[in-house]
Length: 151
Image 1 (cartoon, helix red, strand yellow):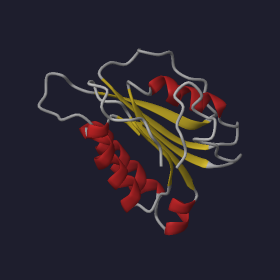
Image 2: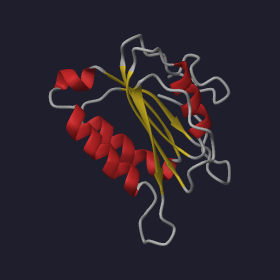
Image 3: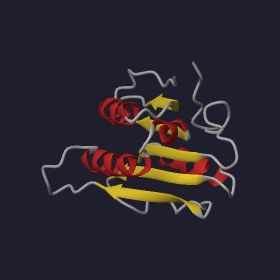
Image 4: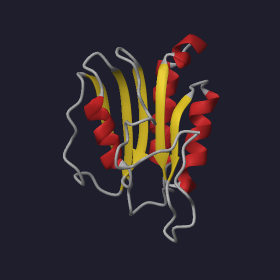
C-alpha cells in the first residue's frame, strides 16, 4: 500500500514514465493535487484528466503537456443529477474510445482521488475496463472519519 501525501502528490503515489498514457480523476477537493500532477508530467505524456466540481475557476488551469487534456465537469445544482453523474458519463465515453483491447488498458497509468461516496462507482468503471489503478486515494469525510489511504 502506497501512502498518498496530499502535499506531495507525485512522491511515491504516482510516477508514470515518460511517454506514458495517463488517466487522472479527481474532484474539487483534490483539484490542487491533480493540477500538481499534471504540471509534473513529461512533455511526451498523453492522456486525460477529469475534475468534477461545483464551479469552474477554483484554480487556474494547470500547465499541461500538449497531449494531456484537463476537463472540468461542473455539477448542475438546479438539476436532480447526482454527484459524479457527469464524471461517470465522461469516463465511460473516454474508456470506450481509448480502450479497445486489453493492451490499451495496460498502457494507461491511472490516478483517482475522490470523495468516498463517489470513489466506488468511478473505480468500478475503470476496473471494468481493465485499467490498473496506480494510486487511489480516499478522502476524509466531512466528519473526518475516513482515513486517507491509497492502494
